[in-house]
Image (cartoon, rainbow, N blue to C red; front, side, top):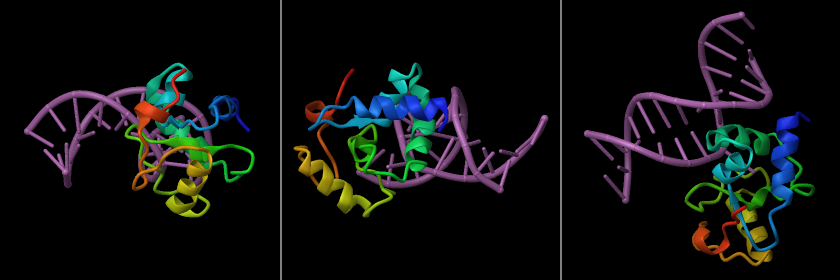
Amino acid sequence: MTPFQKKALHILLTVPKGKVITYGGIAERMGNKKLSRAVGNVLHNNPDGESYPCYKVVDAQGRLSHSYAFGGKEEQKRRLEADGVIVNNYQVDLSEFGYLF
DNA sequence: TAGATGACTCACA
DNA sequence: ATGTGAGCCATCT
């Protein structure tokens, strides 16, 4: 586990229940918004959805990940709704559920 | 060591 | 609204 991953995952854990965060958001919190790609890599590299709420991570438009490792969008959607996040057609309202630091 | 890849984002046509 | 290209970074080949 690299320092980068550790940092990204830590930030992920700070997202409160019922909220979601964007790749860019995490990247920004790490210093540079342009790190969004690297953030994606970290999540992709994290197959353990039980330990980290990677389902809370959506893209800049609130769209769910198209390559969610578990059950695809369906599973991610399920988890988000179970968390209290309203998901419309695999998309969430960031102005409502997006977590800003 | 250099080049390619990606769960991204933004700008522009 | 859709498509293309560029930028930036950590990993993987």
